Amino acid sequence: MLHYPEPITNLIDGFMRLPGIGPKTAQRLAFHVLNMKEEDVLEIAKALVNAKRHLSHCSVCCNITDVNPCRFCQDTMRQRSVICVVQEPKDVAAMERTREFNGMYHVLHGALSPMEGIGPEDIRITELLKRVADEEVQEVILATNPTVEGEATAMYLSRLLRPFQLKVTRIAHGLPVGADLEYADEVTLSKALEGRREL
Amino acid sequence: MLHYPEPITNLIDGFMRLPGIGPKTAQRLAFHVLNMKEEDVLEIAKALVNAKRHLSHCSVCCNITDVNPCRFCQDTMRQRSVICVVQEPKDVAAMERTREFNGMYHVLHGALSPMEGIGPEDIRITELLKRVADEEVQEVILATNPTVEGEATAMYLSRLLRPFQLKVTRIAHGLPVGADLEYADEVTLSKALEGRREL
Image (cartoon, rainbow over all chains, first blue to last red; front, top):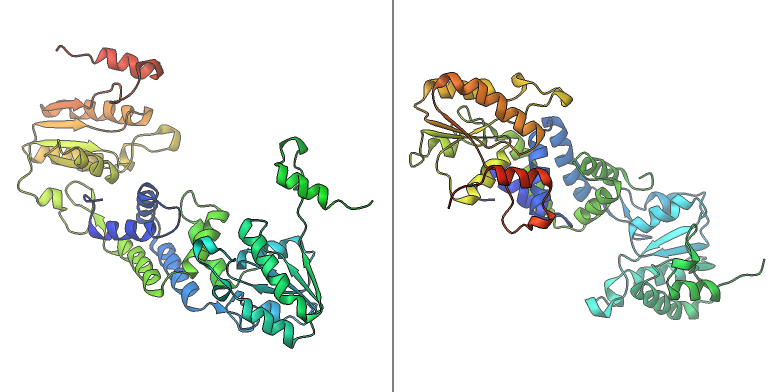
């Protein structure tokens, strides 16, 4: 990067702070920026600053939001008796895309991971317990990822929620739609078998 | 993207204007930005704007620069009698990395490509001819890429430069260092054979 003027080096360095962007990609992006219209570049710069400045966590569900409480928590059309617990704000968007869920959300912002030193106090568990105690919640759906960390978090939460006398459910494991039995890994297949339902 | 607050959607849209960044990557980058420190985000935003605002093309060699003439053209230690013609500013950096070249540069900002409608007036050829006529240039090294467009540009330039009575050379084609003869494509191999030198 030695042979570029400083404004380019700075921009390349800037891009390299983003995940999955190495020196080559950063350089390609930087040169692309130089060829963009100035107003487009300004818009991206503004979007960066605004995203950082105008977003915070919803005081109810901890989802990322620009209003507080967030739009989901404000929406009176949604069913307040069901809370779907997810790891990340992206997962809320994934759930919404199904159009099958009309309850409330709770975003943990992570999952338990002793390997990475993430304990119960590092994710939004206290906030969930407070909601469950305060509100007229009847069901908590644990929709953390089907990974080791997600499973551990679901198990941990289900134990914490037991005293509250409500339904605690876990989203189903099984074969993804369109998958081929032949190529499914054993764990998924055995989960699919275990979770079989009567027709 | 429907289910995110507007500042996030704007940022995702911003990232998607960059080359090679689709909706999934843009989303990943946007969420990463939300977790970054505000000063780091501000720095990236500033780098974007500065790169666009404080850079222009050197009035001599057309390279991208923050001072005019650029550092290469100002450098009195460099050999003014040799001009190396490249397609892009990145190619200048590549040449510099070899530490083998100590002459001047000329950046065309593209290559002739009838397919994409890029003709001689779309790249910096007039500027090159002016330099060759004005200055005490003895050699022009055509270092455009070894692609169809780069070759066509080199051929075109060599014809234009003929009247000026100077040495016009083209960088060598051949096998890349460390390559395996067995896996070389025929064109490269025949170029390597054609360009053989006595030892």
